[in-house]
Amino acid sequence: MRNLLIICGFLLLGTACSTDKNNKEVPTVQPAERKPGGDTTVSAGSHISFERPAANLPVELKPDFHAGKALANQPWVKAPTITTMRDGLGPLYNARTCLMCHIKGGKGFVPDSGDIPVLSSLVRLSIPGNASEHEGVVPHPVYGDQVQGQSTSLAHQLRHSQKDNDKLTHDIAPEAHVFIDWQISEFHYPDGNRVTLRKPQLRFEKLGYGELGDNAMTSLRVAPAIHGMGLLELIPQQDIDALVDEDDSNKDGISGRVNYVWDIEKKQTVAGRFGLKSNKASIKMQVAGAFNGDVGISTTLFPNQPCSPEQSACLNAPTGNDVQNVELADDLLDLVVNFNRNLAPVARRNANDPQVLQGRTHFYQAGCHQCHNPSFVTAESEERPHLGEQTIWPYTDLLIHDMGPELADGRPDFEASGSEWRTAPLWGVGVLEQVNGSKALLHDGRAQTIEEAILWHGGEAETAKSRLVQFEEAQREALIAFVKSL
Image 1 (cartoon, rainbow, N blue to C red):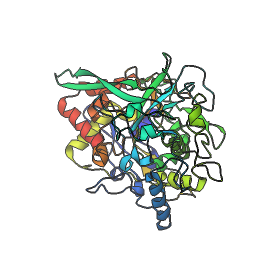
Image 2 (image 1 turned 90 degrees about the horizontal axis):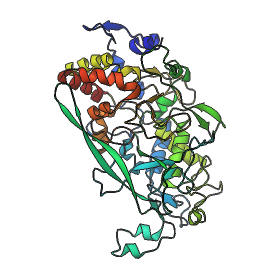
Image 3 (image 1 turned 90 degrees about the vertical axis):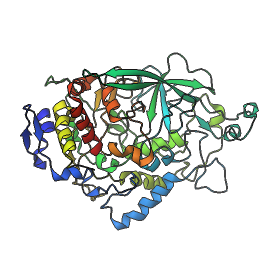
Image 4 (image 1 turned 180 degrees about the horizontal axis):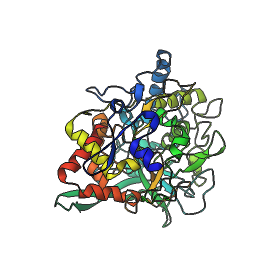
C-alpha cells in the first residue's frame, strides 16, 4: 500500500501513472505541481524571499501578518530599559532577533573558515541517559541543551571595540565560541567524475563555565527555511501515518516512523512534525522554543531563562518580565506564530524544461520519492480556511529515517535515534541561495550543492543514492535540475 500511494499518488489527486522505457512507474505530470503551496503559492519574481504572505491570505489578516513580521525582526535589548516591549534579551543568547538566523525566511549560514565563529547556526547539546518524556534529551548539567555563544555582559558587548578586551571581566560569560574545522574528502563516481565533500568538526573555545566533558553529545544545526509551515501543520496525521513502515514490512529498505514528542500545550505525547528530528509538536512550540533558546526571551510555554542551575549569575540577572511574568506576552507570541504560519512557498521555475521533465523521471526511478513524498492535501480548517483543502507539493513525508553513520550526530531526541532525521521538505531548495546567499544544505550545512547533499545520504537512503550514482552524468544533472525547480 505504501508504494502504491507514493508511486502513483493519492487517488483523490487524480494522479495517473505512466511507464518509462525502464519499466518504472512514474506519475503523469500535473499542472498543480507548478504551485507547491496550492493557492498560497507566490510567484518567484526577481527578488525571491520566503518572508512573503500566502497569496490567498485574507485582507483582514494582513495587518497581523506584518505586525508578526515586525516582531520577528525586532532586535531585543538587555533588561531593564525604559521600554517594556523589547527588553529581556538573554542573559545568554545566540541572536538578537528571530530573523537574524532566518534571513528573508531562508536558511542560516555556516562559516567556510575555521577562523570565523558560528553565528547564525547553533549547537544542540546533551549527555547520555534516560530522558524524561517532557524533554526528550538529558541536558548537560552546566550548559543545558544548547550552546549560547553570546551574553548581555558588557565585556561581551564591547568585545569588538576594545583593544584590551581580554582584560574585561564578564558578569555573565557567554557559554562558548564555536568554530568549525572542515574535514575534506572526495567522492568518485564510477564514470570517473569526482565531487569534493566536507564534514564539520566542532571546536569550542573560551568555554565560560568549565569543560564540556567527554560524555557531551553535540550537534551542529543550521537554521532551516521557514516557508510553508502552516500548510505542513494542516496535513492530516492519518496521511502521514499511512507512509509509516517501521518494521520495513515491504522489504524496500525504508522504515520511516513517527517521532512521538511531548506537547506542552496539550500536556500529552503526540506525533512530532517540526524540527530537524521532528521533535516539536506544533509551530507555536517551535517558535516559542526558538525565542527561549536562541534569543533568551521567555513565554508562557517556556517561562524560564536559558540558564542552567549551575549558572547563578545568569539566573539572578534582571528580566524583562511583564504582568504575565514573561517577556513575550501570549498575544504577541501568537502574532509571530501566525507570521510563520502564513509564509508562502514560491512557485516552481522551469517546470516544463525538457531536462527538468527528464530529471523528474529519474527522481522516481532512483526512488527519491519514497521518503520525499511529493504531495498531500491539507485538512479543512475553520480557523485558517485559506490554508485548508490545498493540494501541496512539499516533497517530504515528515517522518524520521535512519540516514546512516555519516550523517549521524549520535544525539537521540525523544524517540529519534542519533542517526535519524526528518525528511527535509524540498520545496524552494533550488532558490535558497537566491533568497539570502546561504548554500548550507543538510542539518549541519556541510553540503553546498544539491549533489553534495545527495552523496551524503546513507542508511535508508543508500539504495536510492546508489541508483543515482550509477546514472550517466546527463541523467544525474537532469535529476538535480528537477530538484532545483521545486
